[in-house]
Length: 371
Image (cartoon, rainbow, N blue to C red; front, side, top):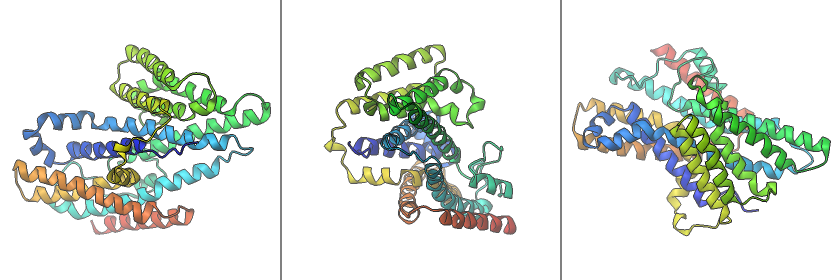
């Protein structure tokens, strides 16, 4: 079986990562207000549609997890809790490292940067909620942009894993049929429920069910080949577009259209046998893709720092603010690469979770005490 690592997936991750950084700059940085005067269409696009890159990450995330799980589902034992705990560790350790940095940066720039993008001084309720990935569910302010996505990622992973475990148990009891098809059936049902119902209520954005339509598309594509269903990937892509088209006719949503586009591209890629694409084998693409999650986590704190510096220049010069945006993106990439090397690349365990949780709590306590 081909490894799930590919230059196409790397490209998706890299592009999505850069778009999210630019979107948050457009949304939260005063530099964007100045840049918007000279580049209004670009600024409007990033402001209004940059967040759609999340759909890319959702589809790719489901795709990669399915690729990983199909191997394990065929074994006699399918361990759920170790996989769930490992996912939590992988998500929360870099998150706590990045949040520690962001909380400290926010405290440092607050006296010199009076802007709505700054979060309020931390409380112990917020600290606990961030460690447990519950900040939106308990209605507390996030310390950084994009933290909500980490909680959603964990919920989606847990949902998909739970139904994979049900499929595995069903297979162990029945001894007939295909465990991959059973898991695929559950995932398809959840995807359709999300596409036609759960995704229609904006108040449900704090729950993974709202986003499962995109994540589920990736899950289905990722396990389709191993399911043994005699339908080609090209036909699968057409079926997804038809079903999605019906959902779009009933309730038009650009987020669904983007998810269907990414899913269709993945189907097309799988239909070629995942052949390498030499033009995409660029070192920078692989490097940004590897560090896409740390970049996503730490970029907000870095952008705050650069925005505060440019803000204090008291300049409405287009060039200065444009350079500030470029510098912010470059520094965010560099900080993310460092976070990847120093934190994300180190093996995860509960001891490291406790250490980073303690460091995060200590940073928040210092901010609470001195401000």
